[in-house]
Structures are given as C-alpha cells and as structure tokens.
Length: 100
Ligand code: HEC
Image (cartoon, rainbow, N blue to C red; front, side, top):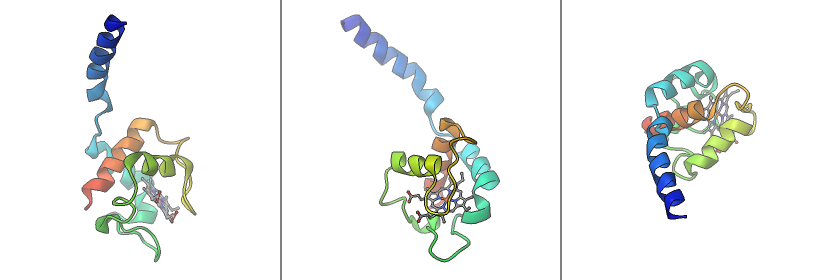
C-alpha cells in the first residue's frame, strides 16, 4: 500500500514534465487551426466572438472547460478531438492565456 503510494508519487513526478504546457507549440497549433476564426492575435474576426486578448472566457472558465470546448466544439466552432491530441490542446490553451 505504502509502496504503491510512493511509486505513484514518483511516477507522477516523472510524468509531469511531459505534460507541462508548451506555449511555443500552442502558438503553432493556434496559427494553423484557430487563427482563421480567432485572428492571429486572438481578438476574433467576427462580432460576438470571444476576444482572448481581453481575457474573454479565459477569466470565467478553467482550463479543463476550455479544453473540453476545443475537443467537442462550441457554437459554430467545430470540435478538434479528431485533429489535435491532448498535449496540443493543453498547449493551445496555455498559449491563449499568454495573449492577455
Ligand atoms: C470556424 C471558426 C472557429 C475556429 C476554426 C476555431 N474557433 Fe474557437 N470559437 C469560435 C466561436 C464562434 C466561438 C464562440 C462560441 C460560443 O460562444 O460558444 C469560439 C470559442 C472558443 C473558445 C471559448 C470556449 C468556451 O468554452 O467558452 C475557445 C477556448 C476557443 N474557441 C478556442 C479555439 C481554438 C484553440 C481553436 C483552434 C484549435 C479554435 N477555437 C478554432 C470559432 C472558431
């Protein structure tokens, strides 16, 4: 039991760097898949879209909710679960937060 717990802590310590967000990859993902609608700088190209440079949605929703919206889609935004893996989605959310 205790050994299992120790292993768990050790393994999560090893896994953590692999799961750390990479903002540079997030920027590439954004420019390739998202900028056509959200604009290169994240302000949104149509009225009523979230302006990420003002923190729209970013202040009110936690990362997991934003990741779920990107996976499943939201409004007219298509879902990206077939195109992007979890790491890409985590990276792009980290990039959105860097636009503030
Ligand atoms: C076809 C245009 C389009 C594309 C492409 C697009 N989005 Fe969106 N996105 C929207 C619209 C429109 C909304 C607002 C939808 C709403 O109000 O629910 C939105 C909302 C969002 C939100 C807020 C979701 C929420 O829960 O409130 C996030 C985060 C987001 N987009 C990220 C992305 C990312 C990251 C990509 C690229 C992987 C992307 N979008 C690609 C149109 C798009």
